[in-house]
Amino acid sequence: MLANAALVVGAETFDIAPGFQALTLPPVAFLSALGAVGATVVYGLMARYGADVDRTFIRVAGGVLILSFVPDLALLAVDPVATVLGVVLLMIMHVVVAAASVGTLVYWGRER
Image (tube, rainbow, N blue to C red):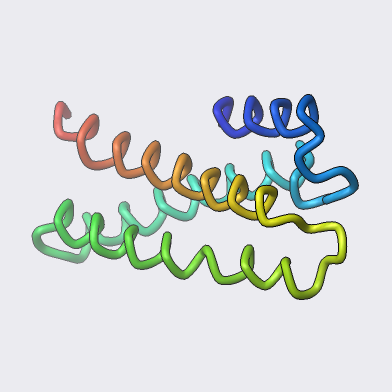
């Protein structure tokens, strides 16, 4: 996700969380891609086996998004270099992936 890569560059430029490895390009790129692929797989399975797929997927994606904040918040307790601003930025990155995934799969996908 290019938007998340831009957020990483911005975080590095403004020295938001120096030494905070979770806010570097390799984990952000990998986990952003993993989230998008996971959303695609879930949507595909729901489309194959479920009814009212778009509405259900939006709800599931919202729930997963909220749950995805838990590990980020835990970083504040276990990573001494984690900063509140750095963790908030990670949470924003989750929102970016969720919005892109839902937007692509539900809204853009309607034009099929």
